[in-house]
Length: 324
Image 1 (spheres, rainbow, N blue to C red):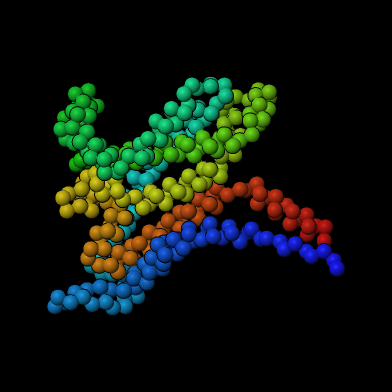
Image 2 (image 1 turned 60 degrees about the vertical axis):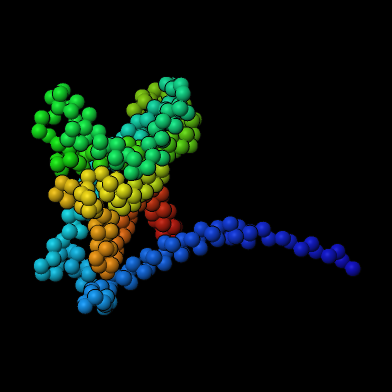
């Protein structure tokens, strides 16, 4: 009798048990609510004689929130503009400062001491609650706040200037808060990307006599592209959905109206405002926000894609056709 073959144990299937909780959670708390949002956006909610009625409205909710229907104002476009302006004013300096710090803290020639402490310090703001930061900055920059009074005494701003009643001042402060809270997280991501670059490339560049800027331009930036893409996409998603800081910083007692003159109201604040009165319109704005986020993410993916890899694939196809 031949030897019995040993039964092979397949360990690959056990990996599915480890990833199953994520997919179950995603299906229940993200994918299913997303699908429901599309469904609710086609419904109309109204009250009559103390009773609530639900009717199928088709695309009427979208026409209303976009201002296409007569008598309706396109609040969505105004709030989308507010959101994009505050995100842009926050993210551009954030990525610039984070890049500078990442390169500076990883430079082998400079050899900064205490880099671990610096990393902890720049990351600390991101773990502070949004409510605490909003209250702190509002107290500092209110009309009679210490920083406002100091800037007046130094002649930086006029004696009548008030950050809370100024559109540029309020937007600038919200952008500054968001930058201060999240530039540390971006810095650590970029540091991990820089540390993943082969040191031999920098050594070869040093031998060739390349300057620091040339190394940054031709080695660091191109090889940081995957991390940069991830940072841009996640920042765009978070920026378009910003809610906590604008909703807590400069709003009236009723809330959800970004002062002054509704100029710091974001899309997420508008969704919450509509949710209290008309779920269908709130869902329609949510779908529009989802579409804008998807478009922005796709544009970033396409614009920051690996063009060299595409060129190589095209060259290979041409070579195959030529050899055929």
